Image (cartoon, rainbow, N blue to C red; front, side, top):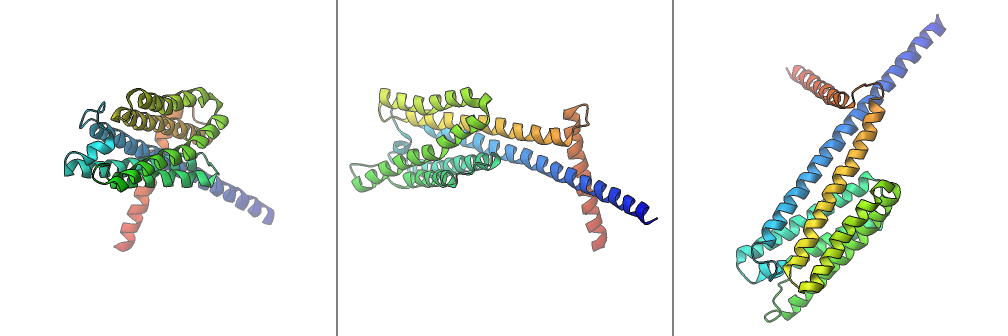
Length: 261
């Protein structure tokens, strides 16, 4: 009798553990989908803001900083908003991707953070050499530091991603060449004009969008495979997960409401 009871308890404990494990996977899957949606929404809004701001004046003539410093106070305020939001978007998405991929080199996280701070400082320093030469040179220094630290933080991470995901190697190298190489090409061709800045930020953000879509999708597929091994249709199985989770949340809300009453 004791052995039979022990066997029943073992079976019950095993079922509870399996149920708990499935629930954790469900929550993790939901969380990854939400993160991907948030990151891509932030990046898309930053891309739209970059295009709008960069084309307020002719980008073949005016750089982003000149647009913000040589026209109206509204343009200057928009320049600060653009730099702040774009820096935050780059920082937020890159850190999220590093965390997703369990990238362990902490100093590269710090470099990306420092780069975002320098972009914000660049917007605060007036680019007016004839009126404020000191702040103009500070502007040049901070903009250079932004480019340096973002590259120091992001480039090693991409090299690591290509080693961990060999199928992404060619695509990542092409995007790096388009983003960094294209920006340098336009700078050497047209000089210090807005085109090279527009090129860099637009294609860098698009690159981050591609990475967010691809890396999160891989993570979601891996979780789904673990969770839905016995499902014939993976897509229907995933939708069922979210229906089950929503039903469970609704049950918890109902229980809390009943307790309050």
